Length: 132
Image (cartoon, rainbow, N blue to C red; front, side, top):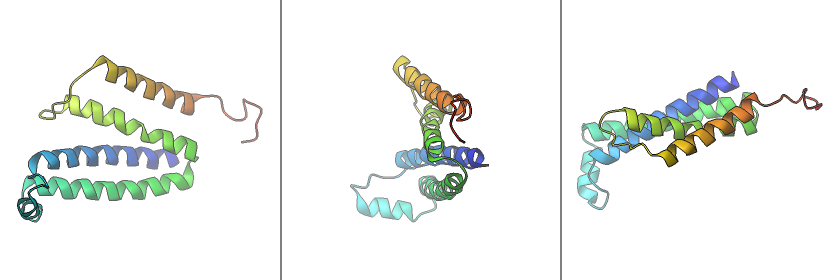
């Protein structure tokens, strides 16, 4: 169950990050405080995206808390890097996000995935002669 809660946290965090990015593009800059505050308290799409992103982060923390109670920190923390992969892929695939493909980013994603596979698919403590 720990991996389930960890993956829920990663997916919700990724969606929240995309939502906050959308809000940033659709709200006035904070350098214009009056316009920003009125936009935040309006029923605009940008304000909804801001609230959804913040609520997503709150929900993600709850999932993360549950994951940490059931999964080793070394594995749980490694799962967080999956969020970078999800946000990069989503920004490329989703229309209007202006995500760009680059070979350097792809190499970084492959390194993240290799690291995750090493951590999760590596030899178990019993195979290394350690007590589980």
